[in-house]
Picture 1: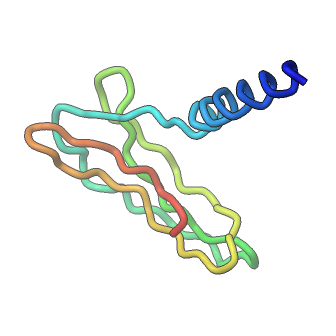
Picture 2: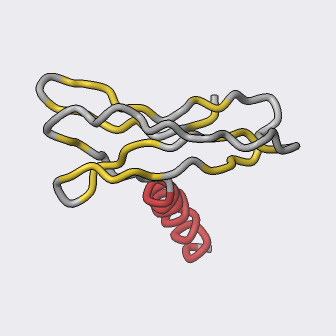
Length: 99
């Protein structure tokens, strides 16, 4: 009986911690604004997918271009493109996500 209570207690504490680690994302911060987006040819529509346009990514002290890709549609949701947002003197990357 005591083992069951202990197991439940550990599960209630550890499971949420593991879940938060699984969904954790690195915070990307750059010291200056990204370059203008590149012109990208958007492929023809693809059933069940939405196009996630390319973007600049901060890596090792410089911006590198990441080409666009398809995101599988989540029914009842809308895709919000990732974008850079300025906070004070720094720029933060806000990843694309479903809302």
